[in-house]
Image (cartoon, rainbow, N blue to C red; front, side, top):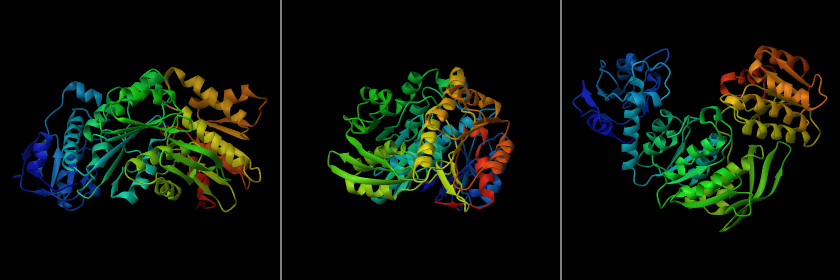
Length: 488
């Protein structure tokens, strides 16, 4: 963060000083985990389900924090933020926020982030949203922008009311690009995040079925995702997926210049001659208004082509040439864990750990990647270990059934469905073809691991994927414990 006195923090957040005269200067990072506080930092006293950050305020100062951003008085130099309305509190989903103090601290943190971003006049903010692929694309954008100037991006999927301002506050006077991932649980959430750090470049990847139980329909999801392009300034740029009609239609909702990306003929930045290697890594020719360049991705799955085109569009807007963008994309590697993380054990079994989260679109893409990996070279036996896709509402049974049927149509050799919530996948697979033991429903992770350990053979390739709530990464971790795998 840029240096700020506690008086400036109080003014920016609308708070009041407590146990401080205001001259104390924050020169370090902003942290909500007292264990990560560094000298000169600012500690954010967030209440949680099990512990309350206010109880660690004094400890944070002892560890070097200059002060604390808090919702109530603490035994430390601090800025006490004002309370929020009940309506605002209800709009923030915070576990353990019984008295609204968490929502108040988040509101203060958001105001502080906006204050800092507004002072960084050389900073370009890039916002990324979509039903799937946000984190992978955010990572790609960060990697293609870094050669052009100092770049800040969040770790993993740190994309909510806490992660968004926390990431923005990592920016300093030297930062040229701030890449932010925007998520939403309902209408207005993306617009609110845009107000924290107003983007000049906005990327919308796709509109799928993730969270359809909360939004009611894909059209409802599209309405909310489009809040990003509505917030762009007139001199901004909206990067839209030409291959997704609901995304392409967002062009009418923005004042910004529109750049379409995809395989469609009307895309301004287009991928042609797409081909996959034996690890389902895509190569293609990227066609732009300023020339063409060849890209060879290090990421697994054809679905990353669209993500790469979006990243290239951002890089080109930031001043890169097509050749520079293509080279950066070809050099880019997976950054965030449990997202198409491909690891091969010494015995030749390959684990595709894509277990961080799941929705129907991302599971379809992962299954197609698995099928491609199994087809390439010597045909390998393929396993799909799948769990529940959460937050699908009334569409849940049909969506799970369709995934099971798709596994059969893609000729996946074995389907292991984990947990009763995902049982319609097993039923769908069983009804789609004359499958017998090819599809099996197991009650939990331990049962899945036992089955796989007993039946995996050298050369097999195993996909592990489910929503975060299923914690199916435990299957991948167990399979890699012995023998130890090596990242490829």
